[in-house]
Length: 127
Image (tube, rainbow, N blue to C red; front, side, top):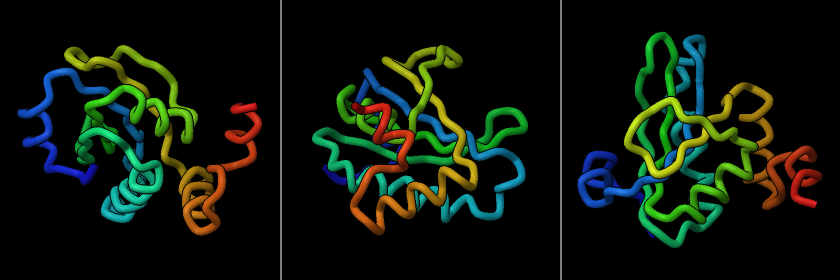
């Protein structure tokens, strides 16, 4: 399914599963690139339901939220980036978070270029 606008997505879906990338304050200048990278990864994972990607702030931290109408789609992204389950925010059907640091950026970019696993850690974890 194609990506939709974040606000439209939230209006249309009441039970949303999110996977949040913690970008950190230092990486604010590359936020557009990070959003595009995550969008490309989600596209590669071929979600079967609706989804949206949006960037925002949480205190001093910049975050990119990937919202999914179907849990299985959120699970695929969470597994790929080894996101951890959290309960930080109210109102979400499920929520996971991971750090989008430089090693993760490079691993995602390499996987997208090679049509492979995100990295060796992820491949080993799936076995």
